[in-house]
Image 1 (cartoon, one colour):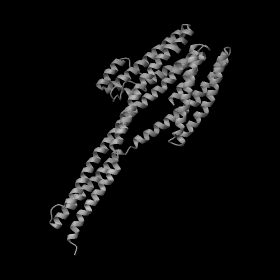
Image 2 (cartoon, helix red, strand yellow):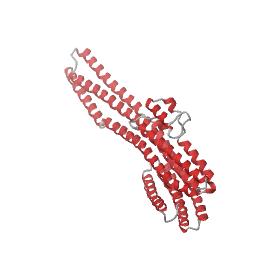
Image 3 (cartoon, helix red, strand yellow):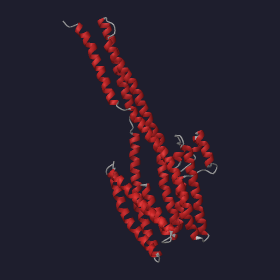
Length: 391
């Protein structure tokens, strides 16, 4: 749903800032349609993949309903803008659209995200792979111990050498027990990588990206909605702080060195959504990619300061030009850099899951074959001894 946020807020405001018929207006209009198509595709995919029933279905229905109303108001604002002499009506309609976005639509998107996060947390908290591994080991050890005890019993009672069939059964049971321990340990370890290393970073990155869309929208709203400019500026500053706050005695170069030396105490001083990724750098290339993304974000914030400086000095068109040009470019660089970090963690999650699946491939079939062999050899070994006592 982060994509929906970006389309719904950022590009509409940008289009309304432009002069109709200009290349900037054309680019903003094309971007509006592009993000609309992406939103429809994303919402359709969510609707087709409802996993948690009512908890997911209700927010999706609300999003569809409110988004329809938002689209209607946004289109009215676009039409009024195109007329060229309806600035007050355009702005009022846009404010109504954004009030709907802020008060109705975004809370439902947040609720949908919250539902998925809560369910993921439940699955992680309910992970019983370690307990199942212990169960398999206990059962396997009991089986091996039983077979050994049975052989010792037969040696004492029949005064014969060890039973070859029972020795084979015990060997198979022992080898499969070792194989099970290695396979389950491998699978459990890979799931731990996915749970403790990849997922927390990925969640932090996605939340930061989502909030950055809103911050970028606040930047455009600051210029478009002059009546509420102070509110939009305060929101922007708060979102920037929520995304990343670095103490004065730290900088990105220092953080990069701390990442390389795994200095957790210093890394934990970084606050905001990116803190979860900064303190959890695990995979090859993740650290440098993350630093590049944070550096790009700082550059974007610096460019934003130019917009506000221009606006306060009375150069409104200069502020708009920076907003639609240099600022958009800087934000685009940030998104690409952050996406690189996201891909690293997504690939790591997929790789861990694939390794876990491979470790347990055909495990049930292997277990069934091993048990059949153990049972068959045990029966054959005992049958030979029983026949000796038959009259």
